[in-house]
Length: 441
Ligand SMILES: O=C1NC[C@H](CO)[C@@H](O)[C@@H]1O
Ligand SMILES: [Ca+2]
Image (cartoon, rainbow, N blue to C red; front, side, top):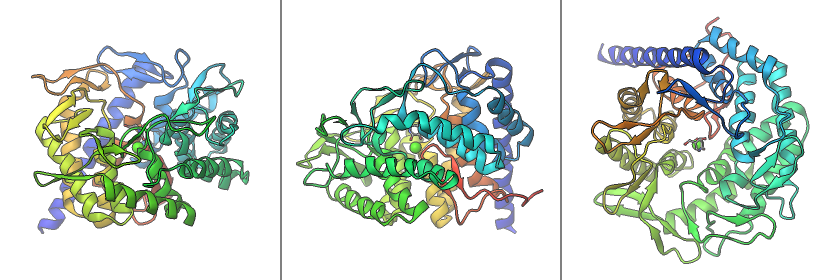
């Protein structure tokens, strides 16, 4: 009947997503194999997180997406490269946060997919190189660390940089039997939470040497987003009651001071973390993940409303601008960084209530990306979403390979390789729980 036909249409869309992933991977292999990021318009490449040295970021970020899509030959090509070439013994500074969510997470999700012990060993080697960053007076980590010497740099950093580790580092401790990783992640998170304001809010910048706040702005967007996300995730993945208590306290404060209903749409204003006064009506695109987290944590009404607000912005501009001012309706930042957050929220809400609406938001996000972000050698970010035609830039970030392509596929494919009931995806989309093996041979 109609329901079977509709399901078949979703599965056909999943095949389209899979074909785009295979096409982009093959172009990367031809143009930029082993480099961190491909430049999809020019066919050149760029490096991240190190300034000049490449660590094959795209390969590590893509692995578990390739596996869950059943692109097994391409998955093996990537694993073989990692085993033969990936070496973190580099005299250079990296962001502890970025390197952990992308490389530790990417290696652990690839290990979850295939069980190859070399992948786990490399994740452990990298975490051992990041651990020294946590040896500060407050136990909150330096922002950067040198992969060879362990010397930390930049003491002024953010809640996200400080507290986005427990799912990956707790999994590493579980798999290796070494408790140091989970302990460092928990201590840093608790140290940050202990410094919250009287209103139970955190701000975007803090000094890890003194514990002094360097900003007064509370936001659900950049710099604070995944601090809240990983409080819930510590409870969801490990049943950590302390994480749940911290999540509930922080979320009650956000829901008390930041909601702004504007022409029937729900927004979360940035506010002063000690007074609750509105600081800005500009929402950054990264905040659009938050509707999915609210749904997971039990505030489905606000989560659905906030996700619908962002779907309205997507419908208005075609693809989301990096910054949107809900007071004026203007694109405060007209670039598009090929980000996954709206697809992330739609996927999380769909896992909770299976409402087709969330699949439609995921579909619109995918079709818009194909229409405007597709270039000769892959998918690219945009210079201006408001120009006619939209102007492309020339950069494909690593998270594209790990996140939205996986969220789209899982939303549409109903694949036997994924347990849709019991699973966990990290803030970088790395599947640390929920892969099913042997289900389709
Ligand atoms: O948590 C994150 N923040 C920024 C990137 C996506 O926009 C990505 O690295 C990850 O989802
Ligand atoms: Ca994220």
